[in-house]
Length: 229
Image (cartoon, rainbow, N blue to C red; front, top):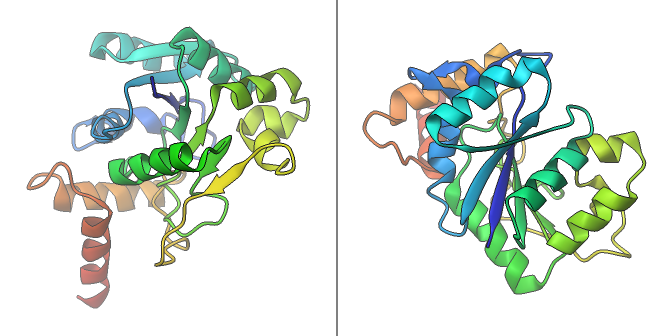
């Protein structure tokens, strides 16, 4: 089984509560989950949030919406991620996604998973050598590599950001990178600020009503049309 773990919390500092911010009338995380469920290679999806009271509304929304949810430490995200994978497993590989990416592309997720399986990677990502827009990030990890990181990582940075323990040690783990010919790495499609959200809101308003399954090519065409208008 291929499990996707979607990290989410409501205590973000730059844009608090962003994952529940209304996007075309529904929580932003709901819009992203709708997109993630179109990824053909993902068998199951779980939201991994914290045990803090601040995340109670998010956990309640998941329960009411029929979305699997796991709650763990707020700051030790590696422990939370690994425990979520174990609780909803056995799964191999495990896909890491973050809930501030409502333009996530199911096709890119599938491509990263396919490359991981084909290349026999311990860790595969499209975010180390970046040619995809920020906000289309995908990380895929074997169950064994994830368990090793959760057991051995002691650096606070590696505990908070989940995967650095692996990609900082290419001599120990097989690191595979998904890239594309066109370098779009300078584009910012994630949501950390009000300006980021305004961009995403504009994309959804323009594309979603006619085509809810809009993809990266549609977003690029929209952005290009607006630049030349």
